[in-house]
Image (cartoon, rainbow, N blue to C red):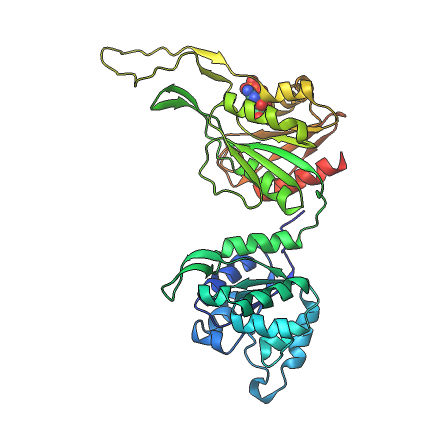
Length: 398
Ligand code: CTP
């Protein structure tokens, strides 16, 4: 499954709030993902951002008036509404929310909105007291009841100086929810357990053994599964990645910590995907105090084996789909096949690590899928987000 908004017609409605500057970035992100975006602005929005900015970034004319150059542009609005796959109103002011909730059509944006039949996502943004007012809350409830999606505003310090709810969420988060609303929910009712990242095995309080796993692949799988309606638990080692929306996240440090978390959650999972790069060994002893270098020119650290979590999952699994990852530097097929059999997996994703376009910290991955029935599917180099969707497609076929 390619990026869900690629080649989709999306209309971005911008109403007149200070957060209109953020809709410029939202537009840029959507265009970057291959969406075909048209912008409709209210007259007041033009006080905050010029139409030329949206025109330059979308490569399309921007609609600001019902009667542009003396022509009746309302026909064009109806065409745009018919062609749209999704509509995002960001920021949505109290005024546009009120109009939409009550069917008022008195300018380009509100007229267009009334003709929309595709999913519409509203991002309210305004002063906290306005947002919490009975009228605005009543209108938002009415819009939800009418079948529109509403993204709650963030809380924080607002441009007007007050602190509270009303801030437009970050463009990445709006895009994330847009993709969620448009994604088919083919994992609805399925519980997924995903692991990600490296583990850290302490030598002393300030040193540890680990590996360069960034967690990106495991997070991509969890994110993709959530978008497709799955009930996702993500058990992750230490990473620099932001927490995921609507995913139950459990953070662990060591392989033993990951093992405990995985075994206490495995029973409830229908699908288990073990992306984590678990440290195979841990120091046999961990000193309580920092090891000092005085008089030590060679330091010997004895290591003992960590539990092989995936192998144990393979032994215990009951009517569950179990997927592993194999990180190899050579003989990909031989090593992946061996792990597939020895760990009793349904599928293993083999990838060669240590290359700029494929491996621990890369944005892309080149993987080969090895199935239990002996078949092999080499995949082209692709973004980790895309690989996550391909993997979920294949798991659904199993
Ligand atoms: N794995 C695990 N527990 C471990 C080691 C690995 O659950 N102690 C899982 C990983 O999450 C991955 C798969 O096993 O899904 C393969 O991991 P990999 O590091 O490629 O292989 P190993 O089994 O550790 O074998 P080797 O290091 O010899 O390649």
